[in-house]
Length: 248
Image (tube, rainbow, N blue to C red):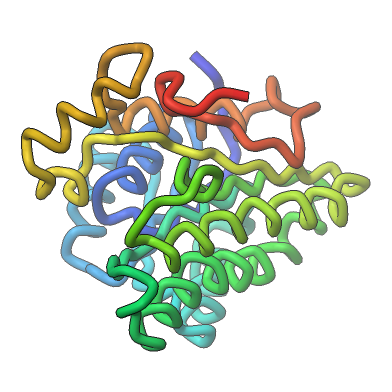
C-alpha cells in the first residue's frame, strides 16, 4: 500500500460520494485528513469513521463558493495540523439545462463552485506547500470537461477550466517541489447518477469498453497514487479514470 504517513491532506466536498471516499483512502494510507464541506453532520460522521480505525482527521465547515469561508476554514485546518501538503479539489455542483434556457444564476453557481472555488482553495493552501517545498494539488475534473455534454454547458465549462487551471498551476510551482494534476472521472456510481433511469444507464454502459460503471473507490485510488512519492514526476497531467469511455 502507498504510504502517506506524516502527510496532511485537505479534501473539499468530503461529506459524501467521491470526496468522502478520497478522504477515507488518504487516511487509510496514513495521511492526516481535513474533511471540508458545508454539511457539518456528515463531516463529523466521516471523521468518526477515520478515527475509529486509528486514523487522524478533523472536520471543517467550508463553502467553496464563499472566499471568506475558504480562507477561514483553511486557516483553521493549518492551525490544527500545522500544514497542508495535499489538496483535493473535489467539491462541485450541477445545474443542468439546455444552453437556450440556462439562467445566468445557474451558470454562475456552477462556475463559482467548481472552478473559482478550486482556484481559491489552491491559493489558500499554497503558502503552506511553498514553505514545505512539497505539495500535491489534485483537481477532480470530469470526462465532460474533455468531450462536453448536452444540457451541461456550465458543468462542462467548469471542468474544462479546471484542467486549464491545473496545467497553469503546475508550471508555476514545479520548481518548488509541488505537482498539480487533474483526474477526469467517467460514469461513476454516486448519488448524482442514482437518479438516472435504468434505460439511460444501460445506454451509457454500452459506451464503456470495460463493461462496468466506475465507483468512488476507483477515483480515490487514483487520488492516493497522485498524492504519493511514486507520482513525483507527474505534473500538469489529466488522468482519465473512465473505463475506456474516452481515449487519447
